[in-house]
Image (cartoon, rainbow, N blue to C red):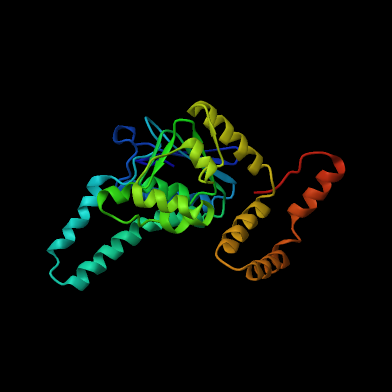
Amino acid sequence: MTFETFEYSVNAGIAHVVLNRPEKVNALNEKAWEELKEIFELVDRTPEVRVAILSGNGKLFSAGIDLQLLMSVKQVESIECPGRRSEQIMKFVKQLQAPVNAIENCSKPVIAAIHNGCIGGALDIIAACDLRYCTDDAYFTIKEIDMGMVADLGTLQRLPKFVKPAAVAEMAFTGKKVAAIEAKQIGLVNDHFADKETLMSETVKIAQLIASKSPLSIRGTKEVLRFTRDHSVEDGLHHMAIWNAAMLMSDDLNQAFISAMTKQPAQFKD
């Protein structure tokens, strides 16, 4: 499939999703947000895709939301009724939240490969990914505070779940740039690499390892991790018991046993 603002390809079970507006430093316009949702819904429903890598072409990963799109919200000023005006703004925000949610709701693991700047709305996007890796020159900033806004697409909701809450608060209150070394220290990224070439090479290796595992178990693991994040340990264990009651006795389990006995790589169906 071809897209206007992304490059999309699938190779050996890995979907490569690449932001492709380098002339606009990968700022996401309305079309880009629409395609982001469409792509990760496609990844979710495509059996041969087992994992996805999200990266960006050009100078930096992404400058976040396109300012022209952001300014379009001022059109609601023509609505006289305050209630109806607020209703339209809420719809606009939820419309932009939906593509980010599509990444988190995708049943396949999503790996963010970030080089150079990850700004504003781009941080919302990577917060919804499962794994994050970056280059040594990468930096992350909650830029909305410098625009007189509260970050509204998921950064403030998701980051405190896996990043030190005080570090998130500092980023959100100050708009400071967090460099790669600090990003790893606070849990924002899993690791960082010297340059983009190394970054992509290493993330592909990680994706290949994930793709070699039982797809059913990988999808189940993502679902259980996501559920557990937002529930108590007791609820999480109960959810896990229900999940395995439904999914444990699978062809993948048999393949894993055969692989362990024969010392040969398991051959899992998509």
